[in-house]
Image (cartoon, rainbow, N blue to C red; front, side):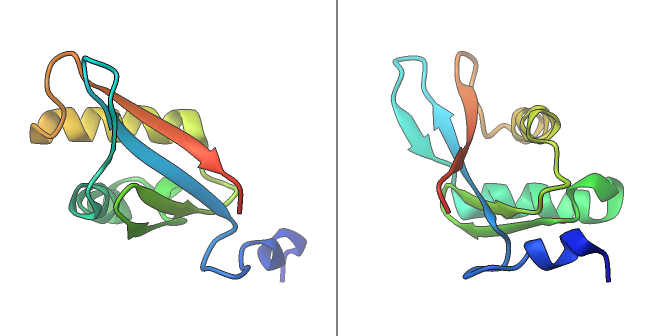
Amino acid sequence: MRPEAGLRYGAGMWLRKLRIERVTASGVAIPCPLAWIDSFAMRNFTNDAIFDDTLPAADGLLEAGFRVPLDRLREAMDDWFRRKGYLAAGEKLRLEETAT
């Protein structure tokens, strides 16, 4: 067993908790629906192995392993949400790590 493998698991499935929000043009932050996050995670389950260590947990919440690069994750989620029509023009995606 790799030494870092034991660090993955904590009280929840993964130690890193990420807040995923849609920020409207007026600056209001709204948690992304679980269905959006799940749609992204299922797509990437087979297409990009770097995101395999992610688990949609609730509206606005994604759990992730330490191997997942947050900047790349945010860019990929932003791209997917725009292609699916989830984010409107002028809206932004905010991804932040929260305290565990």
